[in-house]
Length: 166
Image (cartoon, rainbow, N blue to C red; front, top):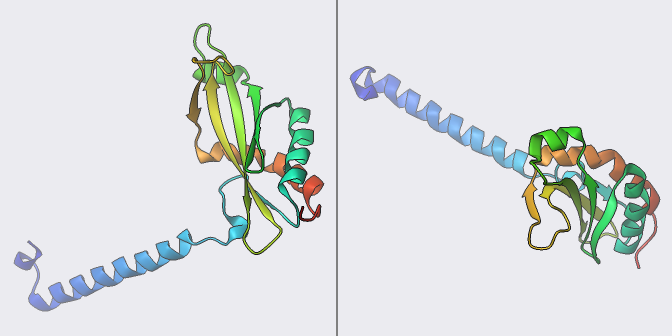
């Protein structure tokens, strides 16, 4: 189609520039997709240095209840999760008649290979009828919701960091 409007020399240049732009974009995206381990995991994630899963779980059990969260489950040594009833905004956005809405934060503990460090990665879900067998329904929230747990995880990091390996 372009052959009709452009002379052959200009068409060849356009094709080369298009190819060069595509390759440049590919290299830029490849560089953006490789993140160092210390900053991986998404919004709110933290690296806890020189520690172990027991210290992180214990610290999380100390920090999260201070902000109204109750322990939901512990899957030692991989994860721990906490629940909190949604506030007015959550009731308006996600609730319906007779249905309770809970915000659940699931903390995944990922050991960093070759170190005594752990990456704590929060995942947030909205749970309808939490704790009601057969009726509980969860929906994963966008990654940006996990960013609000950064300050809490910084406190977990301060409490559990330096505990050493088990």
